[in-house]
Image 1 (cartoon, helix red, strand yellow):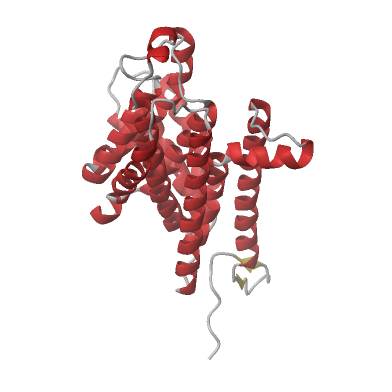
Image 2: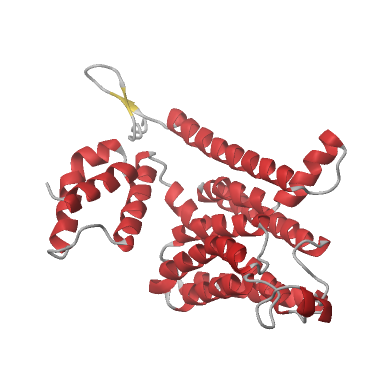
Length: 333
């Protein structure tokens, strides 16, 4: 067995469900080996991403939740719209005129106040490609995700300020979820650009040189964005639920984590104010709140999946009487 073959097998074992691996591992590895160059030693990043996406699809199919995949696509679209709106607003903040005190005493990037301008520019480019060149949208989102992470060590090396982690973390999570949007009509793909333009138009009159990430305005922007996303997700879940489709509910469950992370500063203040009578967001409080949000959102999704599996109609084996999941019993006439 070659080194490349072993590496493909490790990736398949990492990403795919056990049952699917037993049936298709040899076929998948053989396909990748047939397409590989003779001197290739390791899988490319595109192949790793492709295997990861395929593994997610198979895990979703294994749950037998037929509406989960449409719900994931809907959540991806809403996440991309939210990430674009935030990027547009943060780009406005970083392009606002700098005061003389900032330009003299604080390291900055040309006319911009922080390294985040490059990150937000990449996110806006990803939104543009998402709308007009869908075949390039996922690579563009991937580059924006890398930039969102890379700006942290880059800031430490250059000593130029960057957006705080309570802004970068929800942006990264929204971007990861946006990768699930998949193929959709052009009209739907234009939604993130339209939402970003509307957010910029609303915030633009309120921009001045004194506005920075740690003032009250960015905290208000994050809270308002999270509440708007929650409201939209709830309305879609209710509207689709009335038509007998549950994809809106699954989208809402998938978005609970990103919504909580977007509103972490306000949630942190609310928690510490009630427990410790502190009314200022602290890094320790926001880190604890973010961890609580992630654990709670993941737990709710897993509970929903488990309940769906338990309550799903199934038939019984005629020979042994054990339940056979994934089949709907025939209607009695």
